[in-house]
Amino acid sequence: MRAVLQYWPVLVQGLCITVWVAVWVILGSVPGAVILGALRLSERRVFRLASMLFIEFIRAPSALVLLFWVFYALPLVPGMPRLSPLTAAILVLALDGAAYGAEMVRAGIQAVHVGQTDACHALGLSKLQSFTKVILPQALSQIVPNFGSLARSMVKWTAIVSFVGVQDLLYIGNNIRGQTFDAVTVFCLLATLYWILTVLCGVAFRVLEQVLPLNRALRAARMPSQAAPEADVQGGAQ
Amino acid sequence: MLNTGESSHSGPLVPRAAAASKTFEPHGSAPKSQQVRWAIEFEKVSNSFGAYPVLVDLDLQVRPGEKVTLIGPSGSGKTTVLRLAMTLAKPTSGDIKIFGESILFDMAGKPLSGSQEARIRRRCGMVFQHFNLFPHLTVLQNLIVAPTAVLKQSKEQAEESALEYLHMVGLQDKARAYPAQLSGGQQQRIAIARALVIKPEILLLDEITSALDPELAGEVLDVVRGVAHRSKVSMLIVTHEMRFAREVSDRIAVFDRGRIIEQGPPEKIFSHPDSERTRAFLQSVLNH
Image (cartoon, rainbow over the protein chains, first blue to last red):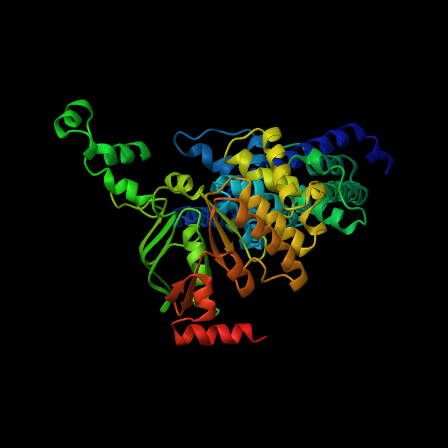
């Protein structure tokens, strides 16, 4: 136990790398998920099909295989760059997250009542305006809770980056195990640290849910007072 | 457009040679002045839902400022007429014109692009049976979405005129409330204000009281009566409130199975309709 704990500076380093990768993977997957999810519902068949094929292509292989492919095989293709382990790992995991998140976005958009789209059309809003001002803000109330559990999974997926030599929590843990031979302590410690990270991630998403526009509106409606004082600060209608 | 139309009218008063030497009167400008006779014009419009015909060769015209109400049994195609005029649906055949401009085809007969269509549909506003307010926005935000996003007004300017319209529907104190905090009648009055704030020339009202209790329907109809009597907006109304239809309409069109079976001033339709089917329909709705 002692022997393991004296490695704490590198453990903290590893933890930081894991958090860094997780944050970028989650942030990177968000725009990808929104764009892919919206294209899944495009009026143009080409977009729908392309988006579906892309999602299936990303989801089909194991994330680890995809990572190995991008890291080891991609540079062998003429004209393709050799990515650093960290870049390759973040890219692959963000794409994976985007592919899974896209289906959540699609479902969230479809859950918004069709009358909302009609109203946007009747008010003269363009398709993009209705999506960004009306449909997506409401769909978020459906998407974010699901995306929260996806994000917790993504935190755990980050462990695969150690396979291409990124010195994350798992990589460091494995090194410490090799030097101390105390596998029990090392892996209990790692499990605890991952648990803390996923719980924190869950908390962050719970907080995010609270500030979503539709949730705020519905909360205000449940309160006995008539008007929500903070409503105008939000400025969702600009 | 209007100017060329009018100057061609004055044409015959000027000696022919003088007119020819001074101004060039473009040929074919006369029909243009004719086109604006109608705010909305349906020309041989048919629409079907699969094999089921919803509208059959519909011809319907609404004059600028005229209030026309469509009545008839459920499923007779009334709502479809409004959805077609708002470009929420496309007809299977025929053409629809808003102030003389087709909302389906350009001059060359090709389908309109999105932006061309958007420009024309800006002249229409619509109020729906289920209000369709944006639940995540406050009342005031609901009213300024279109003015800021479409008409490019500043936020202050949009809010100022939004408050005027809220005042008109008697709900200025609800500006900061969310739709879910309002009664159905209040929500529908907000929806009317939201449709009017973009200053449409044509207002389409689709069974706006059908989802409301009778006492709440009353307050909504009062608002519409006010608008109908005060403004020059053309209205195309679908309703099951016969008393209301009689009060606000200049003309009533009776629908049955996708066709207009009879149309005329409300007094005539309600007191001595020509068609037996109109009589039967009115009897069924007025007798309870």
